[in-house]
Amino acid sequence: MKKVVEMEDDDWGQVIDGVTCRAEEYERTVQYHESGITDGDILEVKDAREAKNIAEHYREIIRKIRGQFGNG
Image (cartoon, rainbow, N blue to C red; front, top):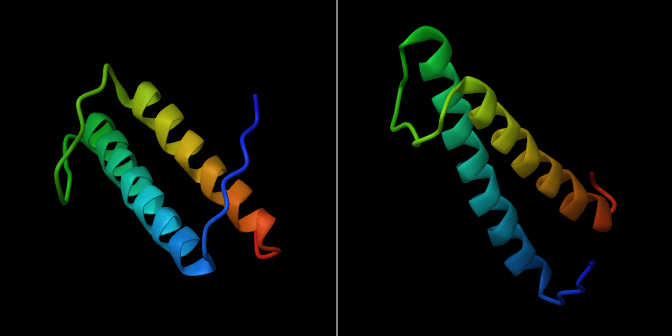
C-alpha cells in the first residue's frame, strides 16, 4: 500500500540525511561482521547478511525519494 506524504524540500533533505545515516550504520555493521573491525558503533543483527539487506533497503528508500525529485 502506497502513501503520499507532502513536505517541504528541505524536510525531505532531512529525511534523506537521517536514512543515509542509518544505512551507514548498517554498512559499518556489515564491515564488523565480515572483518571484525569497525570505525564506529555497530547495530544488533544476526549476521552480516541481515545487516547488508537492511542497509540495501535503506539505500533503496533513498533512491526512491531522490527519484521523486528527479535527482535519483
